[in-house]
Structure formats: structure tokens, C-alpha cells
Length: 127
Image 1 (cartoon, rainbow, N blue to C red):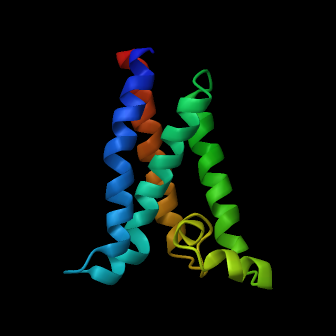
Image 2 (cartoon, rainbow, N blue to C red):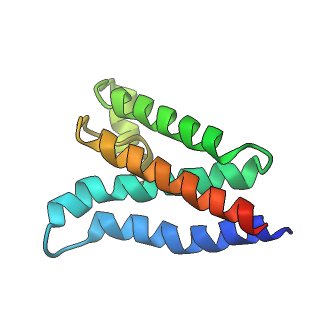
């Protein structure tokens, strides 16, 4: 296993619990952390996963793809057919698909994608 993949795995081990913890955080700015901050970690997580699977794809392409798909998923939250509502009852599915549309999520997705790009770019330089 090359150094870049090892760094990605270690990063996923750190970032995944942090992302889930934003959903359960209780304290100052709780609603902001629960509803918005997780978007940063969500984007970084997916950038890392995609980079691990497709190690030959440039970080900028990964970040753009992740941002685009996440934005599409955000718009999908405006659609509430029965089968999606049933799926959204599961915590993990709701974490991926979301359950309510919010324009204010887009800046967090953008910032998270940029951070994901910067992390992957740094890993490429290290490797």
C-alpha cells in the first residue's frame, strides 16, 4: 500500500467519527453544528473515499465531482415520494441523502470540497 492510501485511511479513521459526532453534539451552537457543520466533514469524507477508490484521479476532479453530487442530493431533498421517506427513516441513509432542503448547506459543501481538495493535494505532494 502506498503512502497516499495509508494517509487516506488514517484520515478516514479520524474524520468519520467527527462527522457523526456533529449529529449528536450538544452544547453551544448546537443547531449549527448538528445541521450545518457536518456538511464540511461529509464533503471531506467523500473526497477521501473517492480518492482511495480512484487513486489516479486528480484531486480537483474529485472535489468537483463530490461537490456536484452533493448539490444534486441536496436538491433531491425537495422530493418526498413514499419510498424515499421510508429510506430516510434509517439514520445512515438520512445521513447520506438528507431529509430537508436548505440553501445554507451549499457554502458548507463548497468549503468542505475545497478542504477535501487541499487535503488530497497535500497527500499527493507527500507521496
